[in-house]
Image (spheres, rainbow, N blue to C red):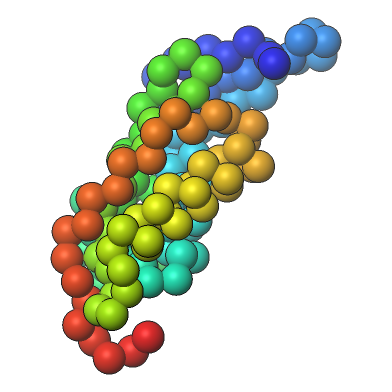
Amino acid sequence: MADVEKDDSIYTIESEDKMGYIQIADDVVSSIAAIAITEVDGVSRLTGNIPTELIAKLGKRNLAKSVRIAYDNDSVKVDASIQVKFGYNIVDVSKAVQEKVKSALSLMTGLECSSVNVRVSGIDFNEDK
């Protein structure tokens, strides 16, 4: 694997073949995780720092603000808060979120995800499934 360094809000991957380096901004990693979460069946919405109405107006780019990430050596830890649709099994949805986030981050960035912490902050009782 390549050498990895964390500096401010950019994750730098140094190539072993010394062709150069790759930098991935924290917002990119957060956005990948957030989009993966919203694609899981049973997730109504992210319930992080900004309201859903604002996300709807501002677009998916601002989903990153609803997911927190932290780096530990060459892996990333993700914290997310979600609302689950009524009628879905909370544990199953949460596990699916964990798997989807780990897979998306690995596939798109090559980062190993050490943990995905899911906080279910509510149930969406709307009848739209």
